Structures are given as C-alpha cells and as structure tokens.
Image 1 (cartoon, rainbow, N blue to C red):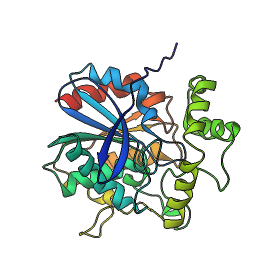
Image 2 (image 1 turned 45 degrees about the horizontal axis):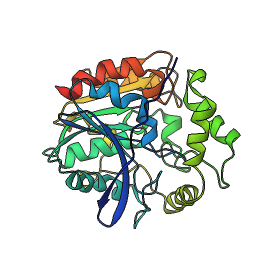
Image 3 (image 1 turned 45 degrees about the vertical axis):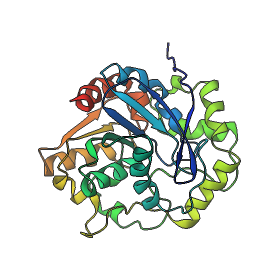
Image 4 (image 1 turned 90 degrees about the vertical axis):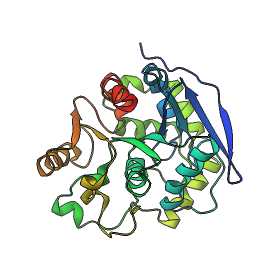
Length: 282
C-alpha cells in the first residue's frame, strides 16, 4: 500500500518572498526541486523525503516562486528561478547542497553546477528531456510551451488533473482521489494565474549563459558528480534519446528505469532512492 508521509509546512523569507518548504532528516543538505507543470509543488516529493533522509541527509523540498504556497516572483523567467536556488540556500544557511531536479528543474540544477560549482555538491536529474540529444524531427519544433509546462488556459477540473497525472505515471494505482484533490488545490486560483504568466513570459529552457551551447552539449563540463535517471516509458522518445546520450558520452552515470514514465520519483520510487540516496550522501 502506497503511503505519503505528511511533513509540517515551514516558511522562509527570501528576498521579500514567503517560500514554503518541507524537510526531513539531518546531515548534508539535498534540495529537491519540482518541475514546471501546473500543480507542481514540494508535495511531489512527499513520498521520497523520509527514505532519502534515512541515508543521513537533510532533505528539503520547496515550492518554487509562483508555485504551491510560495509567493509569486517579481519576474517569470527561468533564469530568476534558477538563481533563486542560491538565495534560498543563503536563507537556509546552506553554504552548499546537492540538487535534485525533476523535469525542467534538472536543467536548472545542471546550470548551477556549471556556474557555481562551489555551491553545488552533486546533481541528480530526473526525466529532464532538454538534457538529452534531440532527433531531427524534434529539433525542428520551435514553438510550444517549455519543458514540462503542462496545463490549459482555463482552471483545471479534477478530471483535468487526473488526466495530467495519467500521462505522467506508469503506475496508475498511485493516482488516488486524495492525490488528485491535493494536486487540484495547487492548480487553481493564484497558481493558475502564475502558470499563465509563465507561459506569456515564455520562460523557455535556455538557462545557461556564456558559451552559447545548449546544456545537453555541456554535460561533460560538469565538474560535480552527476546522476541522470529516466523512465523507459516516458514521453518524447526519452528512453531512446537517453540511450543515444550514453553512447555519445559513455562516462555518463545514466540509468533508464523500467515501468516508469515522467514522474520518476513516484513510478520508480525504490530504484530512485536506492540509486540517489548513497550518491547524495557520498
């Protein structure tokens, strides 16, 4: 039976913004960063906090600005949310931390490992398609929302939320009524308005500055330990592209997990914790 531990909501003041986070454990810090689809929040990590903390880690998941119970940011671009990670770390008294990024946030974590290696101990990437090679038909597509930005122009219904979860999960039994209602609560009102603001601003996937190369072509430059996990049944041919990435860069610590779609930390919870726990602690 799947259970989700409920952790107490905490709040930090970061550059005038009230930011909600949840945490578990003691030891070296690991920040868990959720993706960008409508309804995303720290809650996507609730089933992972305690198991990861058991490896001797202080595990912290937070609502990014404009998500969940956190305040809206002064600007909507992805660059702001990337640099905000460092300001949150400052507010929490963390000189350095491991970063675990799901979907769009995996690129944010890699970008910080490149630009601020002194602040990033290691990086775990979950299902970040933008860090994989593209096939010609995918490279030709320039329009549309940025990675993982799923949602509609109108506030979602419970059926809409269930549909998004069904598209992202292999294990459909994980989609309980309680999970749907919790996600719906994080998808309406100010959170839907923030979602539309992000789309209008075109937050995009281009995080790194300086070299001009896409992050997928800079993975070999990352000096910090990097672990990449992808679901075999994920969208956009992610498994085939991950295989190609491994062929091109044999040294990548990259795993393709069976019976797993985009929410890797749910579908492959045991494998994620077994691989990521010692990696983050080490």
